[in-house]
Structure formats: C-alpha cells, structure tokens
Length: 301
Image (cartoon, rainbow, N blue to C red):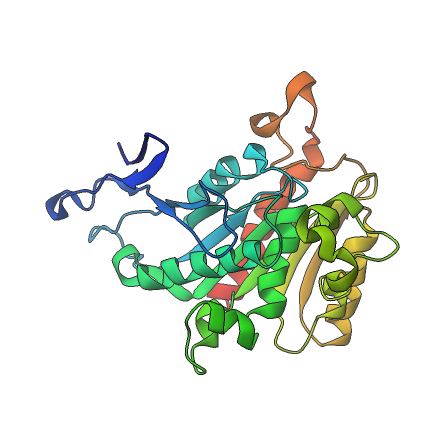
C-alpha cells in the first residue's frame, strides 16, 4: 500500500499516514511548487522508502529526477519508471514536474532549487542522507539537472530561495546523472530546447546556459551517457561537458553506446513508446552502471 497524494478539483494535496502506521508503507507524496513564473500544476512527487527498525539501513541517498521534453513538455517515460528503477536499487527517489514553455528561465531552475529545499526540510523525517542527493535528468531534463550543478552557489539563486549567505550548500547536489543531455547552445545545440527555455531572451542568455562554459572546480561529479546515433541531441553535447569537466579536474564517468535513438529512458520494454520504439537492449545497462558508480562513490570510499 502506498501513501498517495490525491488530485481533486485541480488542486494537489497530500494524504498523510498516522504516526503508528510508519514502517509499513512507501511514502509517496505530492508537493506543489510555485515560484515566480511557475505554471499551475508544477510539483514534486516523492518515492521514499519508509524507515524500519528491522533493517540496518537508516539514511539513504536520494535521486531527484528531471524528465526531458525539450522544455516544451515532460516525458512520462523519463519520470516515474526511472524513479522506480532507482527505488528498487535501495535509493529514495523524487520526480520534479517542472514548468515548461511558456514558462522561461530561471523558473525551471528555481523550481528544482525549491525541490532540493523540500527534500532538505524533510530529510530527517524521510531518512535522507543529505550528503548523497543526486540530480538526474534526460535530454532537456539533463540540462536542468546540470544547471543546478553549475549554478547551485549563485548568489541570485540563493536570494530568490530566501537563503542566507552561508546556506548555498543546501542547493548543491552530490552528483549528477545526465542521460543524453542537452548541454551546448553552440554548433551542436538542440535549438528547440533553448527557444522554449529562453523565449525572447535566447540571444541574451544562450551563452550563459551553454553549460560546458560554466564548469568550475565547484561542479559536482557526473555520470553521463548517450548514443552515437542520437540525431536529436548529438553526442558532442556530452563530449563538450566531459572535456570541460576534465579540464576542471572533476571526475566523470561517460558511456557512449554505438546504437540507439534519442530519449531512450530505461531503454527497455518498460519505457517503450508507441510502435515499440525506444528499446535498445544494450543501452539498458546504464541503470546498473549508474548504480555501481553511486555505490562506489558513496559506500566504497
């Protein structure tokens, strides 16, 4: 049985468990998120493994997922199925349903930052290890996840979140998992994503949002994967980011699969689209590879 949120009359609410019921349910809740520029319905959905005094594991890492969709829509295939895959591996998970066009930057980044603060606020209740919060995203969702990795210590972002000067760290992800991410606004850009994200400020902000140019020594480590055949977001997006992280001395694990279209999600029948598309058996290994990467990083020193 899940602890589920309900949607009534277009309003998202939360159905809470009584304290005595703790220990039997996954904590599955919906938190509305509204910042300046947010569209109605933006929210965070959590998939939290409940604490049990019968298990040695107490605090768990959490994977915060940003589905793709070119900043024009959100891909369901890259949301809950991915969350459940990480949940099955023993992590907490959450999916951010962020605003898309006509909402423009920095609304999406602010919503992701707000989601981080919600997780921080409930960390003790949910038994989240706040030193092990990973942001994950596919395609444009990968761009959004990487935006937080680049801009978590931005003073203007902290100010919009109401944070004090010494509280920037509350927004910093421990690591990033980027699946065939949109990164560059240059030669290999996915133009539609930048147009949807920036609107009439595309010329003004596209350089700032070309994330390979924003890597610093404060950028979190990353696991990145994509395919050679991706005709929508060319592999050069990832290669540019990997190269920038290499120059900055930031460890990164990168996997390039020779076959597979864009938007594979889990790359298995569980996330296939109409007509059996988006299945590429060998690419399905990325989930286990990411699992091994996180286990080594968090638990093997």
